[in-house]
Length: 272
Image (cartoon, rainbow, N blue to C red; front, side, top):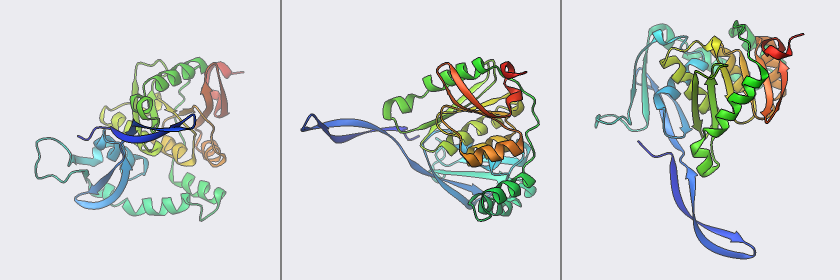
């Protein structure tokens, strides 16, 4: 497997002078997802957790609804298979899951803004059920879990070039974390790992190292994860979607404080 960090030669400018040096950068490589042997999607990603990335992507895009619709997952980069194509994940799906490929294209067009902000939210909310989980988590637990996320980013510490996402139970006993050059990929990786390990999404909190965008709120809601906490800010469209789908969104979760934007009822110590 390709290493996630690469060392390169650079020139550094310091105090008016230029000197040669070395630096470490995050590796970005293409991954092709095939469905039943047919090309479906190519994405740029940080090497690692390729099967999880493919499964999480298919799940959060609404193509698979649970692991029972996945017959087999083959990764072309796996050791011991000289005939497999490198950088390819081939996912064999049941016929009902395979038939949903067209639905995804329609949903992406909604999210792109062709219908306007409120139209996009309205159309997606007709397709995605509201988050049903009544999970509650104290604010202190969210802060503690965010601290754990920030401590567990080895590629970021070396390169400064990755995002991180974790799925965790409020008590921290479950803690699944992934890094990637794309925040969406990092989310799909941990969701894919949670699928493979058969976690209860309704009992988990999602943690982001950056901002909460519309797409990240949608992926979280589609998985049925009730609380989304980020170290940075949410966008207006992410909050509109979260309000409609009953997703709790916390932002600026850092140090000793946080902001709750939607779904205050799930933060245990904010109850009236």
